[in-house]
Image (cartoon, rainbow over all chains, first blue to last red; front, side, top):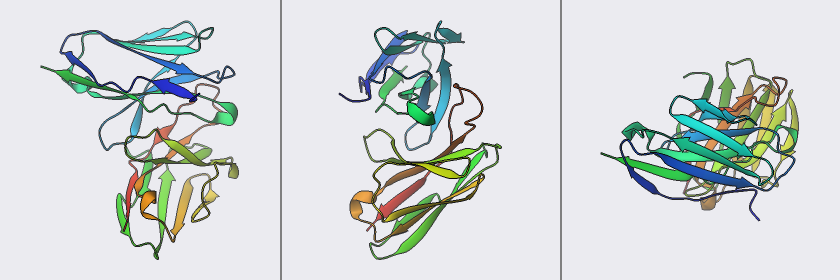
Length: 109
Length: 115
């Protein structure tokens, strides 16, 4: 089983749509979780941390389900600039961040 | 953003060359990382230096040799590489003493092509 599994997509959505991505992780000892976004041929950039109670940052909402070992990201009112690959990142042992392969989002006019 | 700077941005080298990638962070962090990203694959962790000590070496071939002279600088020395080593090499840093939610900050990466 892969350490982090994500649907590669692509998710093709119109502007203004709501889209959700899920991610499952295998290490039950993971304590910290992040979502990063990566634009084509660029470095990953932190989108948001994921807290146990769930958290929201503007149009973005992250949820964590420890029992089922999955993390979700919801994007409301999609913008063209949201087009990117979204990487799910649980933190493993000794500060080791494990990157998923990512889910590609394409927002069209 | 200039928090983590990598040079060069692009590198083309032959299989018999020796070159080095450089990374510098200006964020006051105490851990630095090398990741490799091949086309359509997830980032692969190569090396971790935490508090200037190497703590992770993910079965990386010996033709890749890291060096961390201090907490702000990280090098990746390359020699006798193979074409399959062509990839984007990303440096990152964070604060390992900053608690569980200390995210990584990445440099722009070095796009390496081995001919």
